[in-house]
Structure formats: structure tokens, C-alpha cells
Image 1 (cartoon, rainbow, N blue to C red):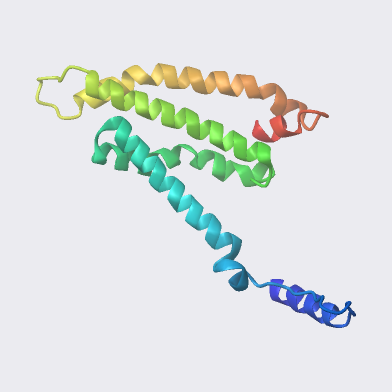
Image 2 (image 1 turned 90 degrees about the vertical axis):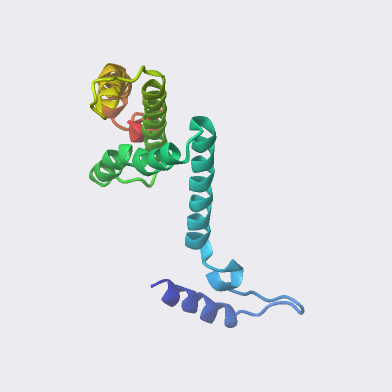
Length: 173
């Protein structure tokens, strides 16, 4: 489809007359710089993921914990990505900002959970996961309260719809 449009534009440009030393040209994605917008976006995404991984590694001082967080944190946004097509998609700035807000909350609570697990005294009962379970149980309340506070704060914007001046907030909610 894009190729047909590009060819149609080229055909129309050839039929136009230009002053001496001027011409019009349609550039392909390959002529502009390789993979086009999609390739550039993928490259920037991979660079951002690597930067996030290195930042988390510097913060936690553990390659294993950083790898675990970088792999698991995007699952926190999965619900928003799955629901987005049902409520209008991700094609607006507000919707993307909403996903970034959910991602930020997920990263914050994940890092706090890791910190809580590391600073908690080790349980000598012989159960490997008891420290992790105790820290997760203790962090459940703050995670739930943050999620509810965010939902309650966005509820008016979700219910009122596209009122003038709240278009970005409606999509975010």
C-alpha cells in the first residue's frame, strides 16, 4: 500500500515542470538511512533498554537482580497494553503517558521490594523463600494503596470523557 502511494507521488512529480536547477524527489526509507522509522525506533528502544539495565545494575549492584527486574518489570505494563485497544488504543500522548505512569509505579515498587528483601534479616528456618515471601507480604499494602490512589485520582477523567481541556488526561486515565 505504501509502495503504491509512493509510486503515485513519483508519477505526479514527473509530470510537473520545475525551474532550471530544481527538482523534486521522493526518498525511500532505505535512501534516508536504513531501516526507516521502524528500524530507528527499534534501535532507540534497545538502547533505552540497555541504559535501563545498566542503571538498575548500578543501583542494585547485582547483575542477576538487574536482569530479573528488566525482564519482569514490563509485565507490570502488560495489563495496560492489553486493555488499550479496547478503550481507543495507544495512539495518543495521554495513553502513552498513562502507560509510563504505570511503568514508573511498577519500577518504584520493584526496587523497594528488592531493597526490603536485601535489608531484611535472614530467616534461619531453612526455607529458602521465606524472606522473599515475608518482604512481598509486607510490600503488598503499599502497592495496593498506591494503585488505588492512582485509580481514584484518574477516575473523574475516565468517567467525564473528552471534556474540553482534559483530552490528554482522559486518554491517560
